[in-house]
Image (cartoon, rainbow over all chains, first blue to last red; front, side, top):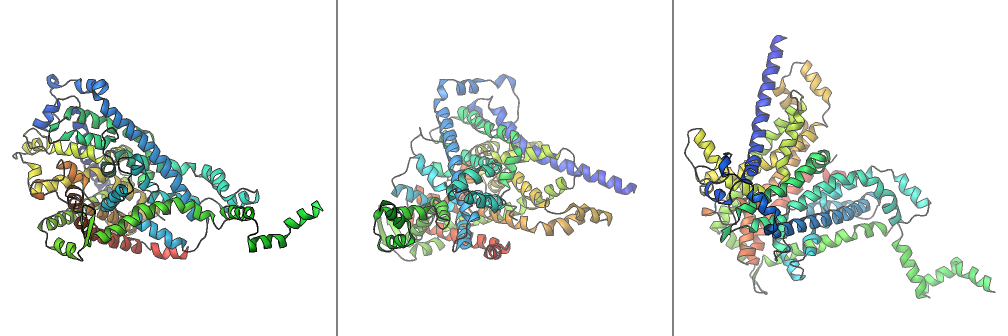
Length: 282
Length: 328
């Protein structure tokens, strides 16, 4: 019995060590980024990122620059990103909910085949499709518009999947009752089902919002003028072969992460629910 | 008289006549409206916007891409050249480098990002540690950062100077500074480390979600029978986590094969010394966007698409998805 006790303690120690090491591995780069917001951009080019604390070389100039007029374009990008994120989340949730309802509440020919087909198409990584999609947008004369950024991602496969599961759990009697009371099919969805679905929106809103906020490759291809840039592409343009603006890049990167981390700390449950939704298809 | 006319209008005979001969335009409009609100039309109305976007933004472009892969596309002029793009691709030295890099990277990611998160999830699930909530929170944070930020941070950590963080770590252990992103092996390591940093927490969450479906009694009875942690892992967790592993495996392979932005950010663009960071998608981007050789780039895309589709179909088949969908 005593032997069992010590081995448990040893195992606990080992596990603790493993977890601490990985936590360190994860936190150190973020801490280095945080420290760098107080350092000169020139230091970045010369030394790279490190954890050294040299109080005499550290200052608040980067923050001053960010919150004074000289970082105007950064805040334009910030605003663009926010607008696009809100728009994308609203549209994607609405359309995905409609699609999921269409698949969950009705029977029609080739329904399951269509659903499988849709999932397969949507599971293709975007990177492979970026070129044809880019051409399509150009052919449709939509390049450099937000429509081009939003439209191809109207509906989102795992969001549809998640909603479909959720709607399947809503008793069919509710729909029947609605029909007896004389509601139209669309009335049933928007007035009866939509309110019941509310709890499932949080996780999906957060997942889609995060994807949209961090989306890089598609806006990079779809947008051209720098007043329309989103935060990730804007930040990316700060490093060019002709000059590096690390002052703004570092402090700007830091403030790009902050809103999501705050949201995450507040709504952790929904973040995890949203991210792992695809894995637990029962 | 008036009343009788109304009666007649509402009678089924009249309705049928209207239906048959389409007597009044007003009536057909009505019936269209009726059809729109019927339970037969409703599902199609619900899925219509989605089907439209899938067709316009996914299917048509893919079809066009297949066509272009058999063409030489120059300034709006297309010339059919049969399989020449594909043949050229097979002899393309740079493409081979890209394929090699991509597969090496994918395999490295699978070797690191499946066993480790699984073990971490099992430890958390076994409740021998306290305060696991803090660890879960910390491990998840990298997944919130954009690749642009993460890539920039890691590029600077793997800087060339003696004072860049990774070199400082090396010096701490008595090593010499390394130009990380200029050498094949260290560049590969840097890319893998970046991928691990970003995805270890998410994969761990997948496994934690998977473990919650395994009844706790199994572990309890195993402990009573004297099975230790390792035996429980091999005997219970790994076999019962198979669905989760299949899923994580598929998304990891997908992510590995389509890897691009990580390398793009780490090497500050699509050109790495000696192409050590070039991936298949990177090559597609170089040919299609940077060199505007759309036909050739399409061939790269189609080849990759076929591989990815085969893998995704296999996963769906393995998880019994087809069988389930048919029986619903």
